[in-house]
Length: 350
Image 1 (cartoon, rainbow, N blue to C red):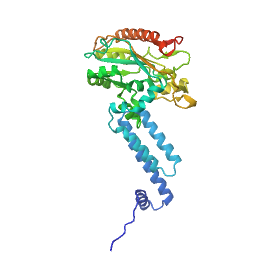
Image 2: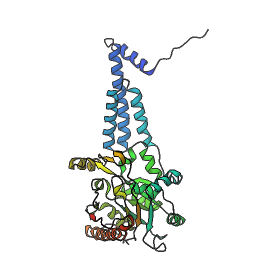
Image 3: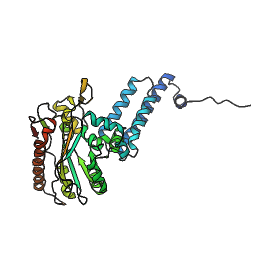
Image 4: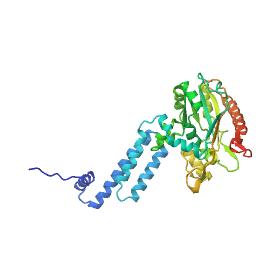
């Protein structure tokens, strides 16, 4: 004769324990207390995960989302568990995947933007197998569509560089690597969080890296009448290049600044976005949705600027290289703006 053991859920078991401990608490109050305790435990777990990743703004985001979802949900256990599991994926390893970058969907994206890439330098001169490079890309725009296009664009220039056993790793905002799924998307494209260690690792393992110095600041500079880039207050990447002795290569993505526009350009939103190192603006494109306008994008890779290694560069030396970079960017822009019909569109370097 078998004995039937009814299934007892974790929730029921915890409620039974609570009611045994506190007899004056009724079932409804016990359920509320259980939900609060579960929310607290899951929030604590999520906070610890994010704290280990050194991302205070994501900790706040997790708490807001969990509490908000809990308020509007009849049963918070399910949604909260899903949220925690989502953010837990950021703890999984993520690496570059050429197979991902060669998916057919990227070809559709290239056709949508009529994407082209040109190298100004002679292939015999750039790139050299014994040299390392830092590619500085402008503009960031509302969203750096061009960086995805160039990361998934395989041509003779890529094959030539790969034949030398080299590759290029993108350096991007660290906050992106604490967001579920975005972390793996960026990593599969070859991106790394923006830390000095990752710059050096990219030089040693891949040979080169790319960076968008304008960052979030340039999201607020998009203008239908002129091209604006944020440059004059950015020194960190130049210091890293000089300390590492890597040549600097200016890259301009013509058309990238016209793919999207933004709502919320107030000074307060700009200040808050830069402090949190995360965009708080609302992008929009076609039909008022976050769908990029069909703007042709042309990437022009300029000539390498030689850099002499200096372990402890002075401010004067860094400013010297900054002036050289600025002249190179300006020349690159005005020599090639006709490729997208921008003969009358002026460049403002701020």
